[in-house]
Length: 243
Length: 243
DNA sequence: CGCGATTTTGAGCCATGTCAATCGGAGTGG
DNA sequence: CCACTCCGATTGACATGGCTCAAAATCGCG
Image (cartoon, rainbow over all chains, first blue to last red; front, side, top):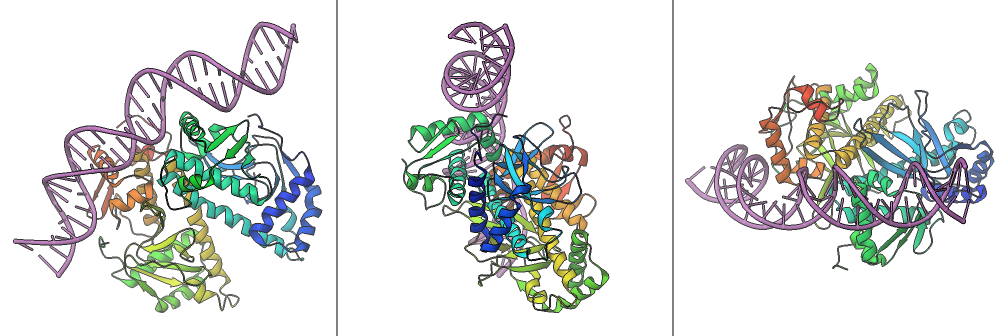
């Protein structure tokens, strides 16, 4: 499990991104932001590949500052399904390991355990933060509808494009995407596990998209071109003619 | 959209089932149950095919007493995806129509608008009910993980069996399933839309399962035989040899 | 008894999976 | 600096699950 690129070389930068993400999802007040900033010193760090599920029976909420994580489940025959990806600004719900899914760090991960921070003093002016975290969690749930749609109705190319567009938009919201490209610390195998495809087919599909001049994906960097065509392919606009 | 069988011929029967379901999910106190019973007079009724999404911008929570519903989304090219099924005892979240998904009644449906009932008087001893409804909603969310797994990793037969086993267990919890069979007011097309398969292939797969003596599905009644084999197929047990 | 909805079946095609080999880059030890 | 190794990306050959089109066969209902 190598890391395609370093995330959060600058902690402050990571915090800004995470803050932007949470604000977008939940409308933080400046005071909330202040309080969050004060908490950064209590950062939790995990190496790539770490499993974050709580050992205790009660779930824990963690606010991601830097790095990527995912929810996944592994079947006894080693098939794997990734349910969602989390990036800075997202909130993770870490439940006991035997639960619906495991939470795994995909890169080096920095986060704050929200329950730990807010739980004990929830009523002393931190209700706003709590609500924000909950709202962020709800956004995660919303995305599951898109994911089910991808898996149930989309073709391989559509799934790939649809997911990449989602990730681009989310990264753009936290200022981690450029106009036409963004860094993606995922392996083609991760994409395959998320999209219900084989690695080989993900690769072939990427090749097709590359050939059509729509998507570049090399060295952890994704470039998306011809947004209109892509949007059509990803099912965001009424379908259009072929490229 | 014809109805395969009448649900809730006996309102009281429906209420008992719904109560059992909610209790299972949220641990109601006897007082809570009493309060719920008092609310039954304010029942909402919808015909099969009705769309329940709220017109108002705020979401509404509805407790299903009798009948089936589903969350679904229709793509511009008429592909359809069903995200979840709801039966008595489940709680529906009806959001504005342009949202992530539509909520559609699959049979005649009877339910109680929880927000309407509990919202205004939430703090007067009804907090328990509110919590129960929220807990029930969370159970719905949990099931989405299984659904994603089905769509992403399972073969047609596995998806079908896995879904039928889920529905059987849920019906059993509310006393609406017999030892080896239960009534299922769904069309093969509904199953197809939920499982990301074509109707034709659902039909063929059912035929295979029928031939193997595992599943009968006729006239809205499902019969499941040889549970061990089924469980293995549905991925509930470590895999076993062929039937 | 006829109609619309659903279920079944057949034939043929295409998307996607599997198996297996190669390639390329990054890190490691000598 | 080179040989080695590992992981991930690519590619080819081939198998097959699931889709489409189209037509019967059934069922529920008026």
